[in-house]
Length: 275
Image 1 (cartoon, rainbow, N blue to C red):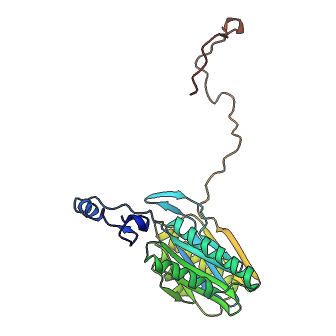
Image 2 (image 1 turned 180 degrees about the vertical axis):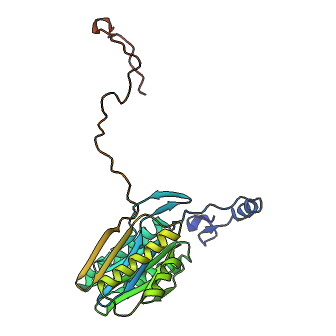
Image 3 (image 1 turned 90 degrees about the horizontal axis):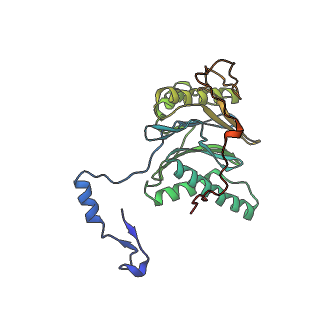
């Protein structure tokens, strides 16, 4: 609710506080300030013997409405780094795109592979600068010259480095699966199965999460994006296109034949107003 003006139009601070009293009066009368929509999400990641597996559901919500049943929540950072995003969809996409572009320029300048700690530092510094107003809760994972890494980044800029991590409104459901079944040095198949079960736990038990399971497996040899690894919300029928109706499906109630000789053609009619 602060209004930003050029410095030469204010007292030099760059902000104008004339509307603060008005906003306080509106809040006292029961008019809350507007807020951005937040999306419910279940995102998770786990480190296994040879790399990292990231997972996410595919439901995007606008309040209580499902806006998109099959959106992508695993964002590209670099060839060896991916990031799952929870929170406001626009914020997660903008932040990850910004870091991805900066790391690409860094690779051009240095000729070296991007490191996880570089992406982590850029994300946490940007989020801390905005004090949580950028609603992006992230799970960052990948493999660099130091091996596999997995980090969580909170909207206020705090971070954790963990062998398994969850974020989003369904994070508690996913964490229950990790704490019950995680073990060190898992194989690729075991890690994929565990992350899939964690995301499905969030989908089935959290109203903000739903639809399908997306996975991304990252190793030193590259990354594999498993789009719709499990398609949970499949339709129970398949619609035929084009739809062919049998003759007699729609009964004819009334029929009238008009001869072309009876049709009048008006050539000097007034033109239609298209202004």
